[in-house]
Image 1 (spheres, rainbow, N blue to C red):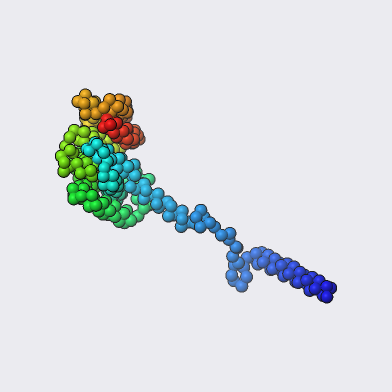
Image 2: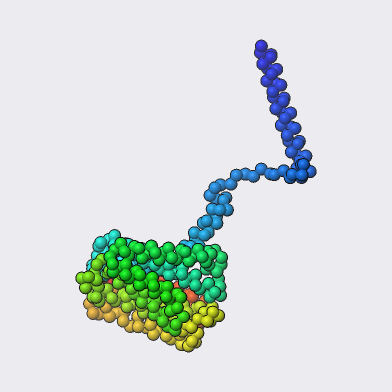
Length: 346
């Protein structure tokens, strides 16, 4: 019995070995010939990871990042922080917290919508000035960008409706101005720069609206309006610097910016007027007893000296690269200004 079982086992092993040798020899012949029956044999592929190896995932990830860049989230973050600080300055608190956060998110979304719409309309100039942007580089299709912008506008305005009718009205006005700026106003000499400055200053007032300070008349006090004035002057000056940076592309598509109409040198001096006003009036809230000493120290060392450096840098050269460097430095300097205003309200 034992010999029979052993014999059967040996036969099975021999049969399996012969079958393996036959298959190996068979596929080797196919590989040498390169084809069999007119059909080229396919090589077995190692299964790829659904995440790291999938081309679809890589495409999706790159597209999400392109949309992320399209909204320019740093600008939206500045708007949201401005709303929160405006609420604090207008009422001494950020209560009701939910309303303040809703308005802050709405400000982020509306500004992001304006940025996306701006890139949608500026594709020709961006092909010259900023070919690396998501739309001219082909990372985001124009029609998708337009749908994205409309969706952001609708959500932002809808959030305003959740707070009160004033917030809803302001959200509608902001949306209309952003659309008008992109389509028409930015083509008018200096008008576009002023509109962007006004919209930036409005973020602080929106904070007062979020806490209901408008109805109580508190929004009209100096503590709430000072940052709005600073934001207007600072942003208008920075927008002219950005126009100097973009002069080549703007001129190619027929835009009438300040550097194109007056020349880059005169446009630079126009931006200096706005920035010099910021420097001159920035200490006065402390001298008038409106803001604390912490504000004075922070605004002089962190804002005024930086603006002086930016003006000296522009005087040394008005190349596209230098104007871009100055504009970027001024954007980050906004955070120091926001910190100074917050400290001044403590």
